Length: 316
Ligand SMILES: C[S@@+](CC[C@H](N)C(=O)[O-])C[C@H]1O[C@@H](n2cnc3c(N)ncnc32)[C@H](O)[C@@H]1O
Image (cartoon, rainbow, N blue to C red; front, side, top):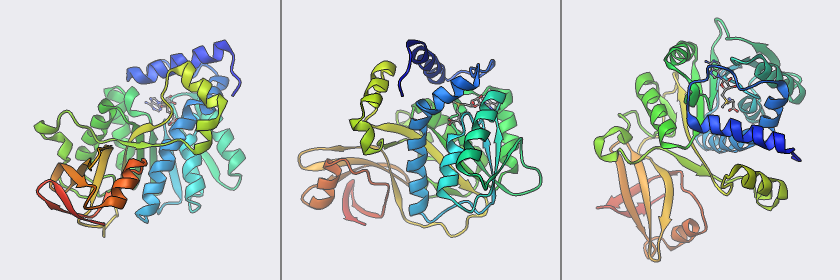
């Protein structure tokens, strides 16, 4: 990642546009080189979010049943490559993007890395498919959201990954409510989302992951973080995985949301379950090993807890 001043400037502009969460009217992919530049930098961070979501799905023993997937708004194709790596049952990739530069670059990289996978453009007709949505929500206007609703209507499962901002997460929650399909993750229930109650308006459903260890050490990523003014020690994200055909989902589990605050004698967590959102406390003296793990940065995902008031009394 040895970049020129012009390339850093291009990346800053792209990131500025993504952060602005504005509808995408004129494509910012002015050439395939710009898509490649994105793929080697900003998309790598997106890949870490996909790694975290895929790891969640593995721990839930869920994977897409379909042989086909559609990566809508594929950009450089990072989501496609991540799912192909993780789920070898996927044999056919449909790539769709407003920008031909993006579609072309994504198809080229998928073909190179997965030569046995059939790569097509457009939207699958008539066959069940898993829909991948990655970092598209910020730039859709009403018309594009309408189009997206039609595409979702044809999918049999959806893996949707977005950044971890309050705005994006809240939009994703509204889609979850609107779709009302069985949710594989992050929700552990099918009740209305607890984030939507007025008393929780300051909270949002988001999670954190860390870049792989070697990026902490790398001078290139340190330069990236400096040039783009990004704190690259943690990466926030939100996500939603839906499967129309899901039946026996686990019951009684709670999902830990956001970050855990660890104090001298306790830790504070926010848990979400079928009864809503709860701010709970874990006492060091009750669960010393768990407290130590939290202190070292472990993030709990799914927990089976019993409560005594707002204090965790039993934990699995
Ligand atoms: C921030 S990029 C994300 C790209 C890729 N999914 C990723 O995660 O790296 C958003 C992508 O959505 C595409 N896009 C925006 N609006 C779209 C629409 N209405 N239909 C198809 N693609 C769209 C853009 O061209 C761009 O490639």
